[in-house]
Image (cartoon, rainbow over all chains, first blue to last red; front, side):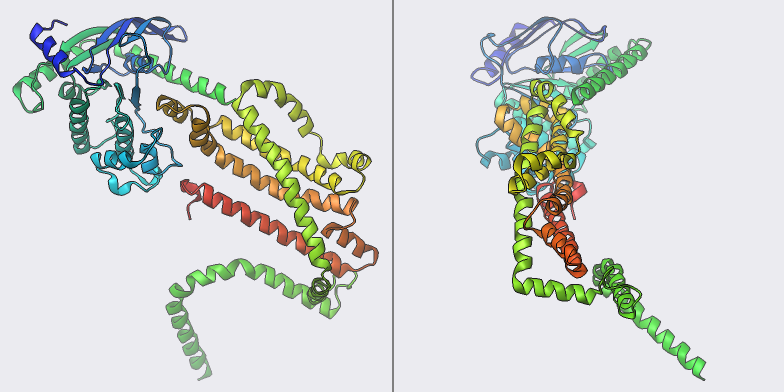
Length: 277
Length: 277
């Protein structure tokens, strides 16, 4: 919450002439079927800032991301992007890769792009250039997610939303991908919002770690560690332990939240079904 | 002595067949589906030859082949086959095309569904063949009547499957594509149509099967040319062999339609793990 003026200046100087956009979330409410998932969430992402949202499953962190992505509309509250004049260039990496199975890997990366020359370069960055002409169906889950990352980053977005995108990757690829995301974020300066349940991942990548509990933001911790962050360092480990302890503080309420999640996903499924019928 | 010899031969036979087995496996599999038809024809030929079957009930296969040959030589066969094929293609084009178009329309736009679907469902429940008297009153026994009849029958499988295909496209993919800036025609071309294609092709296969069923009836009732006319004409002169030639021709053309739809599936659904060979 409390930020020194030096840090503030640093952020401003590094984000100058970059693509990052300011995102202001003000008093956001969202409920599904009478259950309140988000209760008055206030959050501001400075231009080029990397914010990670952590919390137990069902705390509403994914809902917050979907609201910011404008995939869903809030019941109450406001979302302001930049000066509020134009729609932000937002890209999302989903939990599942959501590749189009009828397009080859390269065409998937180039989705919505005028030319395909950059697509191969983007694939090279995620180490899949040699699979460019294969169908997504033959790739492993981790490889598909890497293609999805290439597809998200190739658009050079102002705001990148990451909805637990690395959960399916193996440990080594995961760290590699985290480094890749960090490098590209530093190069391009987009604003990033990462939703994850992995506290270590959040600390490794984010400028700020935000904890959502019971639909509210209950912790907003600035991570002052220098980049690239060494996971083995004492400061890192202490920070991780502290935040993890804070996440685990409310064990008894977690059950009811899990129930909520079950209900919400069911609700969605029913909605989808209704749509199909 | 002889027993020893025969057992030795048997052993040698076994050994050689075992050695051959892996090599001839592929060709054996290719021959296998044809064994039953060939056996049936052989039994049929034998039964007719011995005199168990009267030539008026079922002439021997050889006589059928001879009839086919003379019909082909006189050019009669080709004229009739050509006109039947033309009718099939035209009515499939009209009926199937309209089915596809209306299916896309009602599948895509809720308003179109509300407006049209009830009417179409009512018409669907009228058997196409029940319209024959009306069709003859309207169009006489000209080409129009047959094409109209077949087109109506072919319309519904394509309409229903296209509608269903459009509605069951993965919503997550559409959401993803929209967030990647796709909308309007590109969204339709890259996501919705390919997603609906497996279902549309099921409709195509159904329709192609129906084309021949309906065409046979239409041609036997009201026609002055075509395979159906040829067989009805032959019936009047008790030429059972020509009737059989006509029936076999329908079988061949039906098989041809099936092969075409399989090729379409193999090409358009080559991304689909279920259609890979």
